[in-house]
Length: 320
Image 1 (cartoon, rainbow, N blue to C red):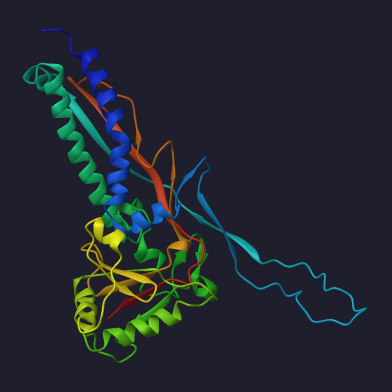
Image 2 (image 1 turned 90 degrees about the horizontal axis):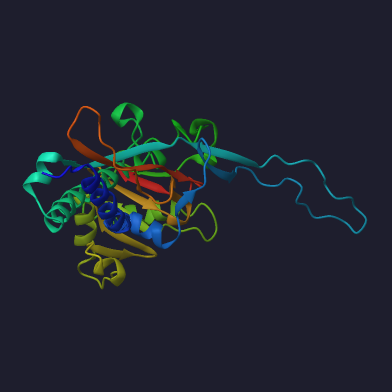
């Protein structure tokens, strides 16, 4: 039997080279939020750095004034810009090919077919993991998870630290909240529209800033769907064509996500939320390597990234 080393390594590398762009596309297109962030250019490649940073304005400029013809300008120095910093998290997966698999799948086409099947599994696994992580709070896997919506748009918006900024100390860094229990309202199909109206208004903390996407679990999505079945509903054809079940509420696309935490809905302004990453692509392919003590080849695919926000008060969360 010919030595598999050179052939297998080359096939692994070239085959994964071919599939790598489609893996990135399929992962990002498999979730409405990621798809919308991608369309807006908010899946952002960063050239380097030890953290991901967002410049934020946290106060108004106090020099603005009405003045007389010969009054002096107010030149008091203003400290109104700060930086939110977000850790870089690593998500990885591997494709392997053993010498036994090489022998059992003799012929270039058969090997490529086997690799293609393995890559499809990797693609699905990366997609599922990232789709779940979108809602993570950053504490999973011993703090290695990305900080998703449960961190950025938290149930308790006046506590915790996001981007190294303590929300308890800065109201501008607190997302909006509609808590059914605090509002003394029972969540149902008859109360969901009023709740949507209230939280939607709360998220309009700045002129011209509106939520444009609402991610809901099955309970809240069903309540909203029932409440709107008797009136005309307008869906987003583009999102619908991608296979996502969605409705329309004012400026927002409303969609059901099975990964959304139970009895939750997130009101998201996608102008101010990002997925940032390091590397040539969202998922970067490593080189095929052969462990010295194993008859196999391994190629890793890695994402070094995290979710970030540059404006917290334009987002909101609804829960019971």
